[in-house]
Length: 107
Image 1 (cartoon, rainbow, N blue to C red):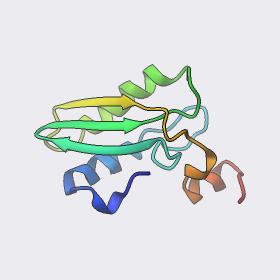
Image 2 (cartoon, rainbow, N blue to C red):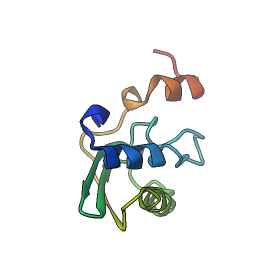
Image 3 (cartoon, rainbow, N blue to C red):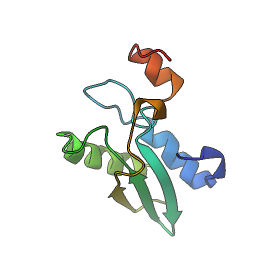
Image 4 (cartoon, rainbow, N blue to C red):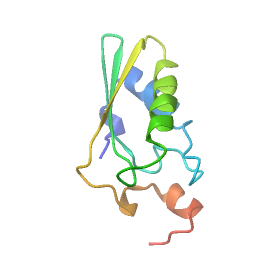
């Protein structure tokens, strides 16, 4: 899980930018969905480690484009590299309370 308090100021700026990327099917941002596992900025390159809710997600190409645009909107970011991982496997428990409430998931 992403530990926001350990991010640098620039990484926190990227984190906030990623909150603007809304999953078009679920209408919840990818951060609150728990899809972002890591954000690292080295020089002017942002490296994002993330997952998808399901393998073969039809939105993966669209998400890559939107995530890259969001990350590169942060000051001093010239490049975004996305690493798609499947471990730990995503589950509903990774969503924020706000996301679960938005989707009507209780517990």
